[in-house]
Length: 99
Image (cartoon, rainbow, N blue to C red; front, side, top):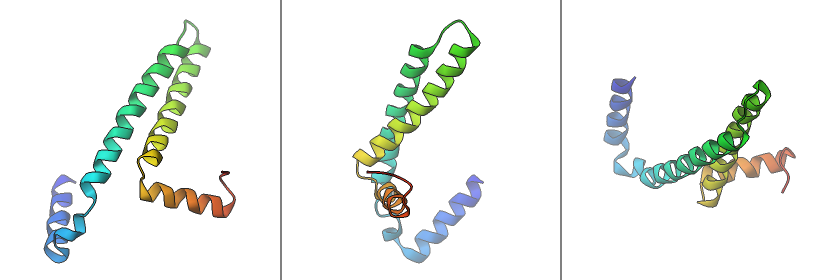
């Protein structure tokens, strides 16, 4: 897979030039920042909700997952991710998301 990805990147840069990768570094930076914030939120939610019983374990897992997803998408939205904004716009147009 890595070799195929490297070959694809080489062919893309050969045919489209360096302009094909415009914005990749900024997008990767936003994704890494969002992932780091999401990891922290998930760890905090899991620690707060943990307890001795099975119910507490299930709540901790679900809470950590929900916190991770919400923070990840929130940070991406806050940092101005264009693809996420397009997705929210399409969802609003379809009547799926409020706001």
